[in-house]
Length: 260
Image (cartoon, rainbow, N blue to C red; front, top):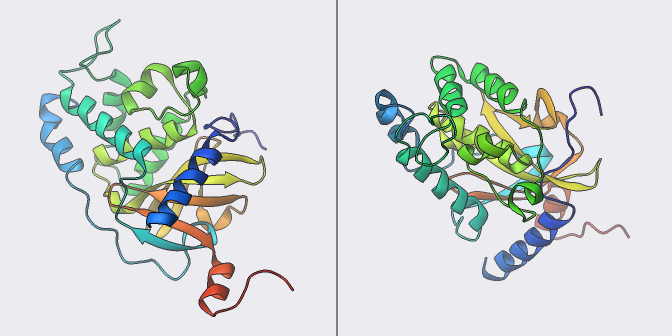
């Protein structure tokens, strides 16, 4: 897998698949502060999300066809972790003293967000990816006694975590540094090479989706990654269902994707 490859997946074998399949079936049926001086910046960074931008070309993430919905309520793992994360950030009274983890902000979080100030978008994502990927992969089962707990950034810095946790802390750090919500998505994928479910962060830089992945330090365009098949992608404004582009085009033409 190359020298940059880390632990393989985050959700526990087949756990996400079961959760996601049930979620998609139900969807188909119903289709603080970092420091006192930074308080105002955080309020801006976590302001209500803007609608997603216009589609960038005809092809979606990882070569798929995308359909968008603003209804993220069914994705309770995502909405709940976003709510908890914002609460922890706004409720932090200052940096955590040694041995204290409640009501304060981890010093690693404060240092990371401060280091992003003044950088351009490409430099921000490179800094975030390199910094967060230094943390060891720790399965949710070991940290939380359950296979699929989604961590806030503060929890991640205390315990490290699984792949969705890497993606979440990268998303939240970039949001705190002023990156617009509409330029980012957490993407839940099937890793075909390892036959496991996985999660990454996609960030659009000058219209191109770049992938921040805990399995590699390289930041690659989604168009160059052939072994990931996205189930869905999501941000604060909505979510995207992904389908193979060829199958979608055939269906729209009234045909069948099944070979005869």
